[in-house]
Length: 131
Image (tube, rainbow, N blue to C red):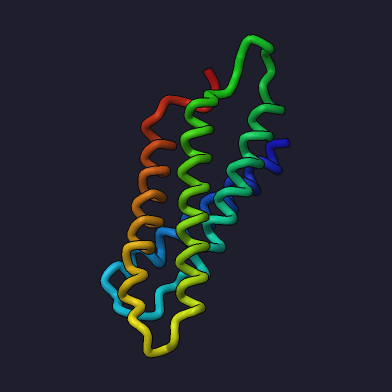
């Protein structure tokens, strides 16, 4: 069980890097935003977050203990919004002509990156997963 948690956590962090990397590198770019990577990272974050929650639920030893569901639901909501924003941005980017104004997609990149940062802050600052 510990191995499954560790592997899921590694992929969860890789998904985060796939969102935040393009965000920081391209936040002032004018074209060629890496929304494919952001979408892949958002998908990975969403799936591994659900897997980590399930693994944490299985690891509870005491029946009196429970997961911090408000934290999980808020983080899940943010992850879903990041996924939807990345999906919309990727679809719009594919529909654009090569000479189109991709600068209009920059707010979507900023939204996905800012929400990913908020999700990280929430994971660190909000008290533990188990209460």
